[in-house]
Image (cartoon, rainbow, N blue to C red; front, side, top):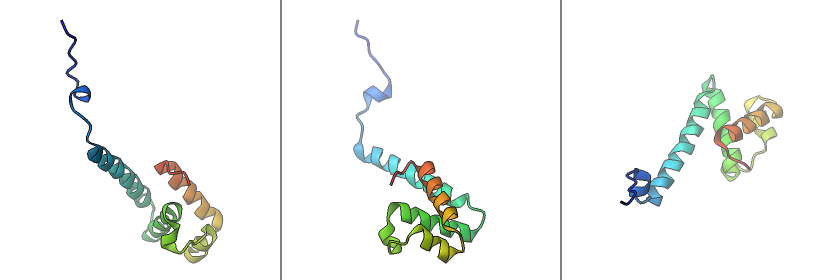
Length: 94
């Protein structure tokens, strides 16, 4: 008698597009949750800018953390802590 495994993991072939979409959705959800955890709209904007700094600095004219802090009225260390928080939350390593 053959040992038939009816587990769907073995029965259904993986669709790479569905896998990619699911992974992208997970990352986007983590990003949105991280930004939404801020206590004010202003803080959410700073978090969005820090996320861009970590992922696509070209979209914010290669601004440094110090420049982001200056323009938002925060010290560089506070903005650096946000960058670290972003990396920890999303698993993104720069």
